[in-house]
Image 1 (cartoon, rainbow, N blue to C red):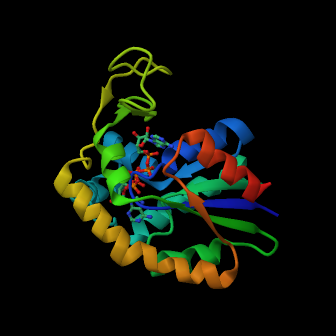
Image 2 (image 1 turned 90 degrees about the vertical axis):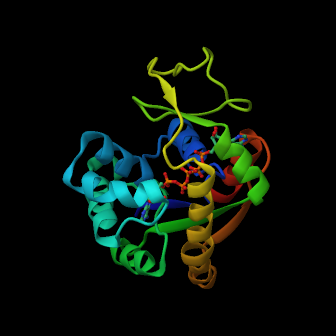
Image 3 (image 1 turned 90 degrees about the horizontal axis):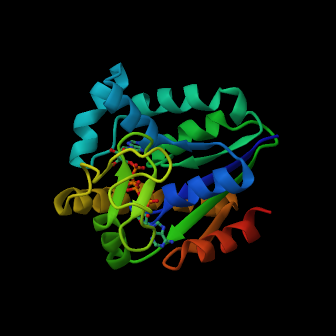
Length: 213
Ligand code: AP5
């Protein structure tokens, strides 16, 4: 039996930040498709090279590429009792793919992190990530101890290439048109939970622990 927690929500609402906290607090592996893809782009892997252009434009990377990455990651030993999934599924086809990955007895929670476009744009404009380890910061709410330097590995903090106003708009459109509609499936399946995600990280986590424990 595996416990699978799906972090669902628009770009910038805090899925990666919540996922990192869950990984630290309850030791569940965080499987972030966005991070796997960014790693691939950085290393110029075969998948990374194919994905780069889509990511820079804020479009979804083709399903088969993403599925290959996902399968490889969740087959690793640390994910055998469960994992936190960030960034998958993002369209109907990916829902179908994920259903095939589920095994009898798996318990699934889909946590829908909700917040307004205003808060999303504020969070994304102030986001910085470590170019070395990918740690996520917010210039005002979750700042690094030393300006521009990662607390964890002392890497340089940079802005993501897809955090420009034009690409943020595209990512929000993709979320509304392709991703949000899949919520209906999970609602019918009975595993969908709403999480108000505009508050402090601790407040968001408090709601989540009540749901998953
Ligand atoms: P991905 O990396 O998954 O990006 P996203 O879904 O757009 O989400 P973000 O990473 O932008 O935001 P987040 O919700 O994780 O917020 P964060 O925690 O950073 O995907 C990138 C691209 O990869 C896609 O556009 C696509 O091209 C491709 N891709 C990925 N998955 C795919 C798939 N399945 N299929 C096809 N293509 C795929 O937080 C944002 C900011 O807010 C940070 O600064 C953070 O410090 C701050 N913050 C977070 N929580 C709080 C809080 N509670 N209070 C205050 N500030 C907070």
